[in-house]
Amino acid sequence: MSYDEQHIAINEVNEPLSVYVKNIGNISRKISFADFFLDKMLIVQAIRKGLPYKIFNQIKLFTPFTDADWAEYLDLSSKTLQRYRDDEDFFFKPIHSEKIIELAEVTNFGIEVFGSSEKFYRWLNTPSYALNGLKPGDLVKDSYGKEMVMAELNKIEHGIFA
Image (cartoon, rainbow, N blue to C red):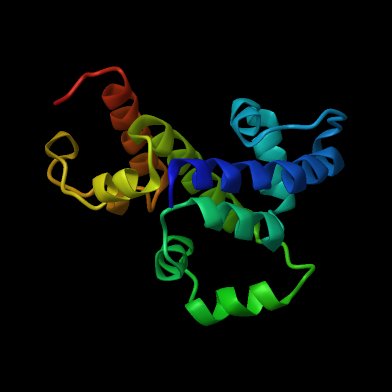
């Protein structure tokens, strides 16, 4: 996916996200995906309410993760994800909503740092000396690992290589 295609995919999340947060956060203005990550209280509200599959599907479009990756990260079977897709009114449980938001945040920042989804995905799947030889993609499976990956992306963004 090209850089422009990624930004189009990210921008396509903005409209359904704006509609969604109006219902949960009493926000009257349109909100961008990037703005969403700056409002921690709104994130908490979204997690507790649960993300609708429609927004998850939009997020899926700009992330470098396959359906199998998502199933693994969410600790769900591929069949379960397919079943959720077929239910127009499906909302993820808070535990899954939190993971989706975390992965979206990491992806949003990773694409910003690396300039493309492909480069970011390659970095995610390459063992990192700074992360004790582990692949960043393996660490994002839990919140502590996600924070380590975000810290490493922040270092890379600022030119601090370990």
